[in-house]
Amino acid sequence: MKVVILCGGKGTRLREETEYRPKPMVPIGGRPILWHIMKTYATHGFKDFILCLGYKGNIIKEYFRNYQWMSTDVTLRLGEEPCLHFHDKHDEESWTVTLAETGEETMTGGRIERIRRHLGDDEEFFLTYGDGVSSVDISAELAFHRCHKSLLTLTAVHPPGRFGELTLGEENSVKTFNEKPQIEAGWINGGYFIASTKIFDYLQNADNVMFEQEPMRQIAAAGGIKAFKHSGFWYPMDTYQENLFLNRLWNEGKAPWKVW
Image (cartoon, rainbow, N blue to C red):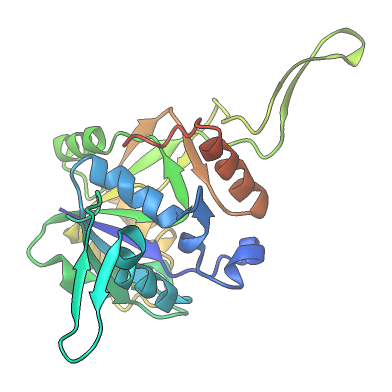
């Protein structure tokens, strides 16, 4: 079963980083956030990836083309009979990565439509964004999706707070402070979808269509969307401050999304 990751957006709210690279390549703990997302799926046994490239997609291509070089010790012999030997193994050796050019200006609906041919005969696939990490149980969500036989399952999550949460006592003293907690009330779409290939019926000539707008509204109106509730960790990386927050969690050994 393949994992489709949307990697083509321009990430304008994170321009401090995305002026030089696509947002999925912005690092957390020295590795691109894209790598963290892929590790989450791989931990559950899903290692066949399709990356929908767009803005600065060549940087993502270069990253995976050079992955072996950057991950292991290498011995090479120069001359008329060149030889190359990689000394070490790494956990990502079983990954298959399809790098699909889906257009720099294409909307999410069009990006999904354009990778249809890479799914082969698969009748379902994972779909997510290249800019958010979560501790969601991918295997449990897949079981939920298959049980309900929905066209589309989304991960419903509690939104993260944008500001520190305070508990005030007498005379306005601060009793507790929780930096950017996840809000317990309410649910939002956290991505981490599972989709039937029947959703392509809603994605005809969709280059200028946001998947999250009319296509999803139509699927919902037809009763085709189910929500898998995830009350654990979920966090997007839309701003520089959010990038700093995720890096601090990782560097302190407190990254809840690290399930590998």
